[in-house]
Image (cartoon, rainbow, N blue to C red; front, side):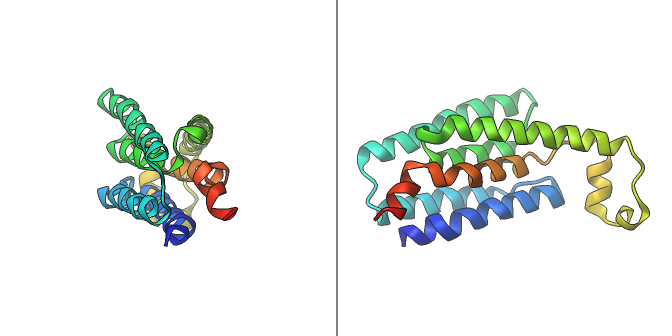
Length: 168
């Protein structure tokens, strides 16, 4: 059961969050709740010890504190803040810095790409797609959930929980 949570549910929820953010500019609360619930199942089924559990909870709480502050200051969306915290719960402190660095770099590249594309007129074949028109609008933010999901999928194979699972 633990391997299903880690190898199937976690990647699916990350991909779903990225797709929803791209298409709607919203990451539903249900995604973050599902990530937390799946982590609980993983922790129980995988026999995560109290020390490991405390580290993962601490990583999630610390990330939530920072991202909630960024949300309150208007730098990121609420869905992004919750997704980052729920993802940090899975990643733990051992790969948290890498997760945040990759997410920042990917988010910066995504932002610069969107800004550059917004300077160009939309080609008529894609101009009919509502989500493309919305993304092209200069008043629209950046679907940062894409960068968060990409980063999570990149660092997860280097986390302690992944390595412990695949070496069993």
